[in-house]
Length: 286
Ligand code: BEZ
Ligand code: FE
Image (cartoon, rainbow, N blue to C red; front, side):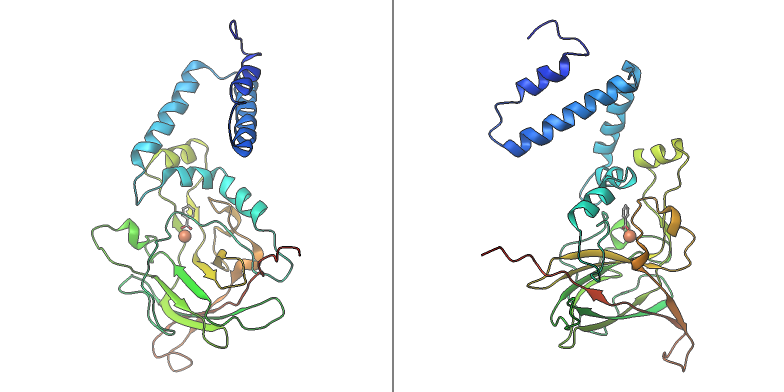
């Protein structure tokens, strides 16, 4: 096809993609091309603006490595991560809701016993976290594998501090026979997402802040149940209504209780109790 212009280019690209051996790839790419071309026509994208976009993506690529994922961050601030999470995690009422994964999960965090202190030197006020993993009918889920990770009081995850190697404020544990779990860690604080790169520049240009409300991350897996990836958010946080990545759900907001020494704790600190209800995996129809 020759003499293609801004109106015929879309059909030309769609026709060129028709030989794909993957129907799904063909469907996804056809839709992407249609929306991308419509976008460029709608805003009358200039050549300078097109090149600015290319420079932005190039910077995102250059800053990305095995510890820093600028493209996930971009998806997060554009609301795409929350959209994809929401449309793939519809659950029956009563199940714990899912939210975004974020870029700071690490495979192979240390496995600890119930009651362990997972802070491992991370800075913060001591905090005990307790809860139970249950099925929808209330049955305790024993042996659920629980990954937990959080930032320190300065707003940094261990993986953001390469000068201090080691796992801090992250661990994996398993629920007991009664589905219950508990561990010691530190109080969750609000923190800004990494904003020293192109995504941070985009946020400032759009008049947006980079802050996330205080939260703990959980990933919970047990046979017969869907994997749950979620957070528990701290009530009263100033950023609950304006999370930079749009991840807050009201059912995931909980109170962190202040414990005085001698009451239920040896030292002043906080405690959080939060239970998780897992969604059973779909049985294939017989
Ligand atoms: C997080 O909660 O760890 C996170 C989520 C999205 C972007 C950056 C950080
Ligand atoms: Fe986080």
